[in-house]
Image (cartoon, rainbow, N blue to C red):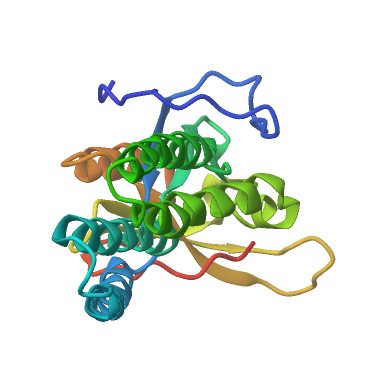
Length: 251
């Protein structure tokens, strides 16, 4: 209907509640479900610290070493640390949305990035070979091999063998809401998001819980999604345009 891409497959850990009902609309998307301004500021701050540390490494490298060696060690440290902090500050979550006659449900998940392990393994191996070759020309490159490829190799081993680290970067969640539980529909003016407020009684509670559901949309499709949702809501549900803040997860 809206030509949404379905490039992400639902993982086997998650299942649709209304799978027996025909889907009216569905799509998957990878999005940052947090305040990106804060993430950018954090990345900029940490990058500044890394630049200072990189310059310090360059400065303390003995003057007897070649200029290429000094630059290689410093650049390797900067690239490795920048890659590491970007993975921490700018992670993306996978989202899958499905609309049926009963309501809206979505799955969100984050798998441990196996590609990062593959990258570290191959990059550390290739750079180690390069440094070993350069060491045949200048033995001081053996120090660079220990600092650069050696450090990346240790990081790879710690990530690959740490179950707790991998679990920290793995999440699986499923949520479903009936149309009558939605209390407000809003088109975000600051993000590609349709915001749905809901009011539900959680299992084991005797009171209503009011929260927001952010429906992350493809570029320039939030208006179409909001107009699709509107007929399924009660006539007294407000339909507005407003700045939306991504709330902290209730999971």
